[in-house]
Length: 314
Length: 294
Image (cartoon, rainbow over all chains, first blue to last red; front, side, top):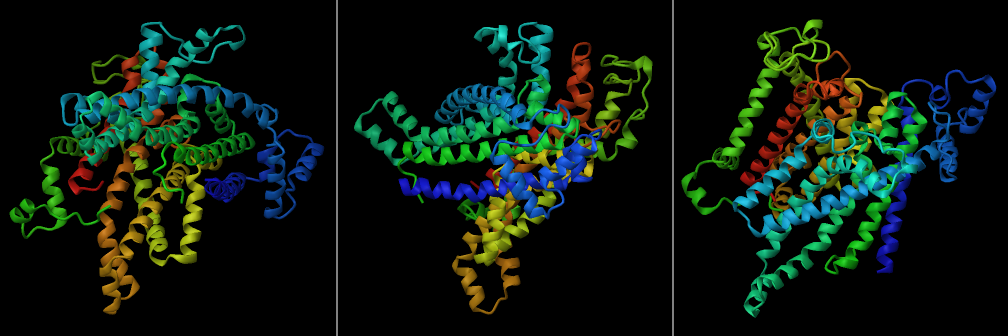
């Protein structure tokens, strides 16, 4: 087991380096002089010289990369052009918001997805199955930024039940009030993973139901309920692994949803970075989110075999 | 994963002389959902192509008096947008860019990713390691994030967004075609072809492509829905199409101010994106089961 973990971690190292190279090259990709991209246009000559020195802009590219990487590892991701604040500080706050939203959305998607998937898989071909499958494929196909707008129209404009945007003034709010701001964005964000999980769990349950061990259990005299628990036990590890990876997608993919709801997370940060052409902020946020995704995949890969000993630790 | 699904006995009897693809089409024709989706997509595509002929108004000229007029207004069948332009006209025209931006990246990614994947799978060794490890790095990014990163760094614009979406869609196609090629390469008939003197290129063309084409195409087809949603989404956040170009994602964004006064009109561009992406998904499911690809 330890060998497997080490091997998996060793595999994540070159990936992370590749990710950092890709993020570094974003500045090279952007049109214009890199210097004008990392420093505001009205900066003084001293500031420009300092930036040149700091980023090593007169050095060859590989050297620039290592300077950038050294700073990044030390937690220095440069300064936001728009706000002038350190990028790392901006990301730190936003990450908390995005993580909490992604977490709640994952829980919704997991509960709904597993529930509907199991029902659907058990009643394969029935009307219930067809209804659930229709919901699931709609969830996968719906443009979630549009779903967010529709939910705002329904629940904020028409019914006036829930706040339409923002996260509120979090200092003065209790937990319930904070949650109220999260309901709509979380549901919006959960739509796609709910569809994906439902479809996967449905296929899983249907597959397990047709396996020999189910017939054996029935022949042994187990009740439907007891067999059900065997099915769940068999399907759960895979479902959990799917949810784990989906959470990473939610964390990173929430840019559109956060824009719709003005949710102050990393997605809104990216959106602002794009609007203001704030390349250091864009680069830093992308780097942090991508590394988060790499680590999450690593954790899922390491934890998955613990729950499911059938997986070969290759 | 089976690459050439053995025809079931009854099909073999009924359509003895027909090929594999004819069988797929026969099965697809018997699926009402797939037929419905095919009709919807054809209609939307045709209406986008012939928008200049069928649209009742000019997509870029607005009348102040008709700003945010409700559905059913005289001359403006689906109402007016925030600048008094005809919604119906703009939805018809909007389909052109939205469809192109969704479909072209998948086609490009299929060509590039497929070539890289087959090369990696067929040659193996060092070339394969280079291609596949590079793919792994791109895979480390969630797709939306990578698209936003590339399009955001390049700046807004249709070409940049197309490029970003293509880059995002290449890695999954490389992986799928590589693993399909690797599996086919080790089969006996490839060995037999080589033994009887076939060159690498003819083996790839006849044996590899002939066998992996089906599953890879089905996979690429399943990416269309995602690509449509992502393309419109990038325009929604200001990358991609620029005003006053009609494009569904962009229209959805510019109508956001109208969700209080005219929610139905504000929602319309999103409905179009939803219909197209749902149709592509359902058709892809139908195709998958018709081809018996798991």
